[in-house]
Structures are given as C-alpha cells and as structure tokens.
Picture (cartoon, rainbow, N blue to C red):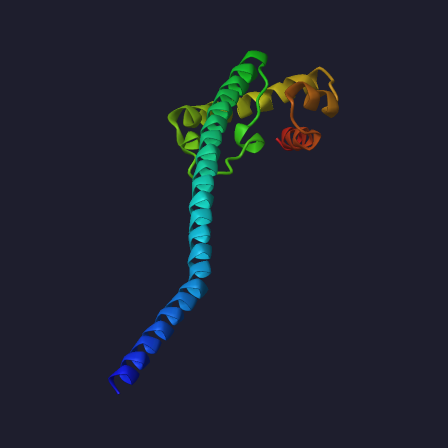
Length: 157
C-alpha cells in the first residue's frame, strides 16, 4: 500500500512538473511579445522627442529669420519712401510668438501710421503730376483699388 501511495505521489508530481513546463512554454511567447512591444514604444518615444526638439529648433530659427526680414523691410521702405503695413504682409501663425508684441514692432506700427499720411500726400502730389492710378500703385507698392480709394477721398474733400 505504501508503494501504491508513493507511486501516486510521484506520478502526480511528474504530471504537475509537465503541466508547469507546458504552461511556461505557452506564457513565454506572450512575455516576449510584451517585451518587444515595450522596446518599440520606448524607441518610438525617443524618436518623437527628437522630432519635437528638431521642430522647436526650426521654429526658433524661423522666428529669428522673420525678425531680420521685418527689420530689413522697414529699413528698405524707409530708404525708398515706400509705405505699407507689415502686418498685412506677414501675420503670425503661432500664437506664442512674442516677436509681434515687442517694442520695436509697436514703434514700427506708429511709424507706419505716420507713413500712411505720407502716402496720402504722395498720392495727391502724383495726381497733380497727372500720374495714372496704375502708375501711382506701382510707385507706392500698393493696390490700384487702394489708390482709387484715396482718389475718391481726395475728390470728396
């Protein structure tokens, strides 16, 4: 009887060990897949962070280029006496762009308002020289409709 109990215990332990091995083989591929997924997610996160950093660097570079271009536009318009509103030409597309609220830009806006009066006087002078609205628009770098609007204002005064 003891031998029978011992053989049953041994058989049960063997069955248990085989069961454990089989279950381990079934679970192991899942663990391997999870580890691969985790490593892919980590790599994806690194690539995403690198791309975001590159985009932020490019945004900063573009802000600098825009600032330089705005300054050059103002300098050139002052040199040639051409007046136009920078804000009509370039509008900020990024709401966090602090460049547009700088004191230089505010001063430039005041200068542009003064230059609009100069534009009005320039149109008057060119009309006295019998220039056509197209010639005036080309000379000032503005649209023909804007010139016609000024002409109508001058006629109504």
